[in-house]
Image (tube, rainbow over all chains, first blue to last red; front, top):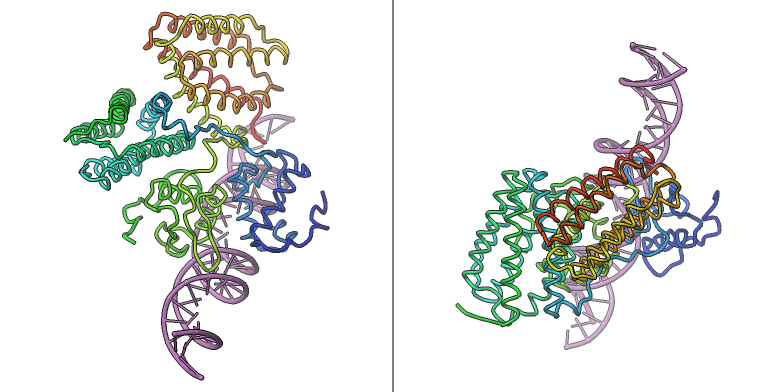
Length: 250
Length: 250
DNA sequence: TGTAATTAATTGTATTATAATATTAATATT
DNA sequence: AATATTAATATTATAATACAATTAATTACA
């Protein structure tokens, strides 16, 4: 392992140094000369070997971390975590147009977010509460008249739910929510030519948000669970109802 | 312009600044307040707004570039190239070696499977019941002596939980479970040189399985939820306990 | 008007310094 | 001897600054 780079051309040209450094590191991983679990040379050593600055090395490592090939820990070092691209849980984009599939996605969201609310009630800090309450106010303040306001309402709604996931301090609750919400957003945007919101619905939802936020503030995990379930069930019903029979009414 | 960050709390939360900055930027993209094609504020401005160094901003941008959300060009700026993550929800394999991350994964599994049990209780058919009961018996029958039996035990355990997800008739509950269980299996396999199972634990788990199955058969959604929660909490504690005493870090 | 030179803005890279964290070694304590 | 504490060391994380490279806009000039 002494000189892994000795014959390595000083980074072919064409792209940025970061691009080239990324490729160089990736090659060592997928080629297998850096087995899974091994610790990489320190950033200082790498920058010397590849004859680039430490900034470039850090940028390359950060990209490979985003790809899941590397992992780094402050004070310990960087490690090879995988030698193959990762495959994840994914939703076929075409399914969001399918009412049955959409209902299933909403149902999955139910399980995730109910528990998220319960956990958030136990762990929420001051900053979390601020975010949650700010999202509640933002949603309540939006008047759903035109399409632009509807969009703002959807944003505020998602912001509320995301703030709760953040408060769980669990990266996977947040990550899964982000993914599910991105999928759901498309559906809502697609179907908003019909009236997706009614004034009454909006007021109800705002009140439900407020109740959930109150339970989380009170650190009442049980109440948070119950109220979030109620909110999501009603919310899903409203969404599916509108998208189904395109009912518009003021 | 309109100060997109003015009310944004200066990045609360527990991870590295780069992680938090990444989330902050990603949020603006997926929320849509930075539409596809728009140019981001300069790195200097972003670092000032988020109150972090330019290094942190660059690292965050580089990650989002790796995800396909952003693109940057020297002399021009950084731009939103997509509002949809290229990859679905995924768990870095490196994280299963991390006790804290592992606990988070188990916590997510909690939310998913508890609701799955509740839904299964409402929808289970005859065929579903057969599968579930058969998995209960298989797990109870395995004697955990050698490594081969331990593996069989893990298989039977996953079979039980999978059968419940099948009974939900929801493809996404099953899909997410399959993904999570694949991630968890690696951890269990990795740590099985140490004693991952004890006779007492196995008997307890078998009894918990039986109770959950009974509730699902009785179509008692509430009981299924409660019993599954109990089972998963105990099960997680057992797993984390073993990995703690047995195998610690890398 | 058209073209070249200048200027400003922005990302890319380099450098240095410090903080935070984890590991290891040394030391003290019982 | 075993254990706990402390110190030393190595590494990543963050900050700050400077400069290079590139692009876009502006100006000067013919």
